[in-house]
Length: 150
Image (tube, rainbow, N blue to C red; front, side, top):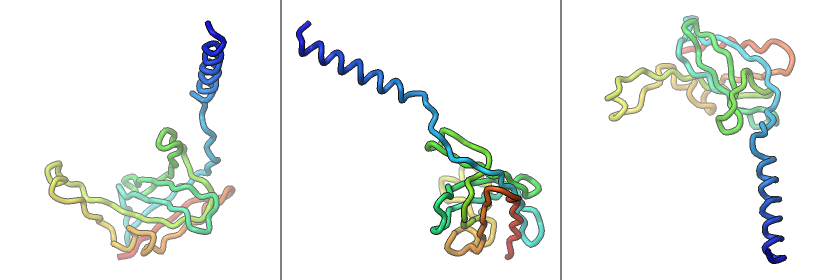
């Protein structure tokens, strides 16, 4: 083996070691805190609603999070990290703007002709129009009672 091909072989081996060292390592996810709540519309529980949390501009620690309500309108928030590879219960502390939507269930054939309608008041489907806000604290009770109005 020539000196040049020996150097290339060593360089290739070193590169393989560096790549292997990086594979399989879990990336660190930020600490989350439990967040629960209940969604009602004029006092009645809203099932199958999607509650989305978007960090406000003044929040330096917030990460988007989401939850879906159960039959009683209650929810527990989860956060997705690592481009969807890791889901962790709770969310990071910070200031958030909230949206709440509930999409109608369409028969399979209807998906071809139109998108499902939001069954909740339109004002809650955008952070621009929704007045729902939340401050999630690192310590303390993070229960959110979201009573939507028509």
